[in-house]
Image (cartoon, rainbow, N blue to C red; front, side, top):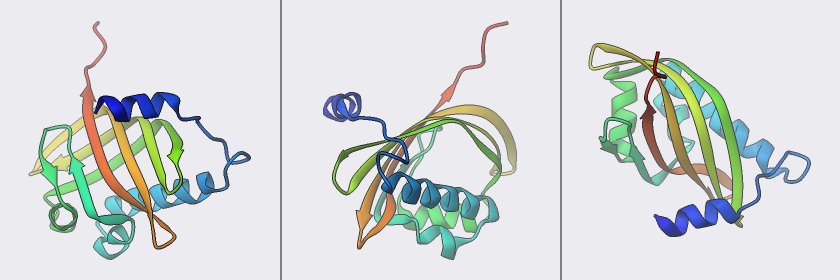
Amino acid sequence: MRTLLIALLAAVTCSAADNPELVRISAADDARVSAMKARDGAKLSAYLSEDLHYAHSNAMVDTKASFLDLITSGKAKYLRLDYVKRDFTFPTPGMATMTGFFDVKAIINESTTETRICFLGVWRQEKGEWKLLAWQTCKVPPAAK
């Protein structure tokens, strides 16, 4: 984990003018989020690596198959997932990291939750397409009043 954090700090955050892959990976992530909200397993599957490791903020971990089941079965319904901040870095060819925060409203096992989430995503190019390889999140505590 320490090596990954060092790589993140060393990598340069890119703009679309610096790296045309930023446009492609941003579009892939936007399509992934849209498919999650729509509970469209076929579309969502297209943006997930077969090697997916998806760690939720509640410490549950999914594979590609179990994550697709979670979304398509309705056990998890994402009503809102709005990025507050989303940055990509390209530490090595064919790999990208995505970090930031998003606000989410979801129904998980019939219980509604609304919170801010901090995330780290790892994308990998597979056969020329960007696929989400790993996802790690944690809840951001509400600001003290």
